[in-house]
Image 1 (tube, rainbow, N blue to C red):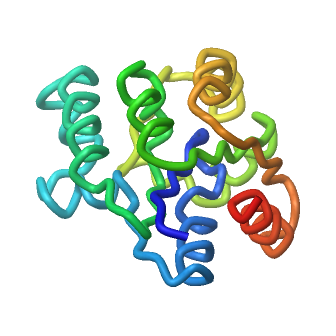
Image 2 (image 1 turned 120 degrees about the horizontal axis):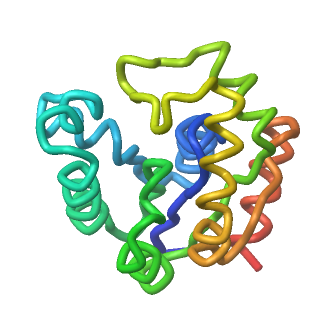
Length: 170
C-alpha cells in the first residue's frame, strides 16, 4: 500500500490520536498540519490569526497541505482544512480521505477535558457545545464532500483503528 491518508473532521474528533495509531500500524510517517505550522512558523494558530486574520491562516494551511503530502504518510488536517474547495479536491485526488465523525456533544465533552484554548482560538465566541454544533452544521457537508470514507469515532480507539484498516485495504 503506497498512499497518502488524510484525516478530516472537527476539533477533538481524534485526528491526531487516531492518525498516530494508524501511521504506527502501517509503518507510515505522521504529520499533524497544525503542529507542522507551529513548528515551521514558530507561531500558534491564535498568533497567526491575530496577525494575519483567518484568511491568512487558511492560506498558510493550504500551503502546508501541499508541502506535507507524501506517499506512505498519514496527515491529520486542521478542522477547517475542508473550507477551501481546492483543499477538498487536492486531498481526494492525492490520497484517501477519512472523515472522523462525531456528534457535537461528543466533541464538546472531549474539548472540555482538554480545551487547549491558547492553541485553538474560539471560532464563534459561543460556549463549547454551541460552537461545536455551529461548526458541525457549517462544515458537515464539506467533510462529506472531501471524504472517501466516514467513520463514527464515538467508540473504542481499537475499533476505529480496525475499521480504518479494513476500509483502506478494501
